[in-house]
Length: 174
View: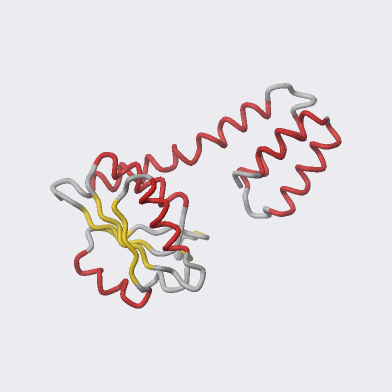
């Protein structure tokens, strides 16, 4: 998604036809990403309502950090009295990475990531966390549940949510 917004920026400079074309292509490629659709719609509307795109883009840019603060605060509250938390996670989620990075700035944590094969998303998450200064290690997918008894928290992303279920990478339910 990060590389799509600059495409809109460039299209706005080229004009209304280019903006409409890029917006259509971005939305066609990201069918389930409503915030990105909103930014595209604002880019197209910007020609009739100047400033709309800048406002929506600023909201879009702020949203990931804002969305990380609430779960980080909930985790911080849940970890009161815990000297150093051990957090388990499965797969890769930008929201989880941001949340754990915010939390780690306020509370010592060690993150255990399942490797999440065959794609290796857990390896990528561990690298992202380590680059942000968060203690993170990777374990084999088959071993992640053996760490549950010593875990302080389990934090995972969700590809979809409903009232009675959620879905994430295969193996998360365990």
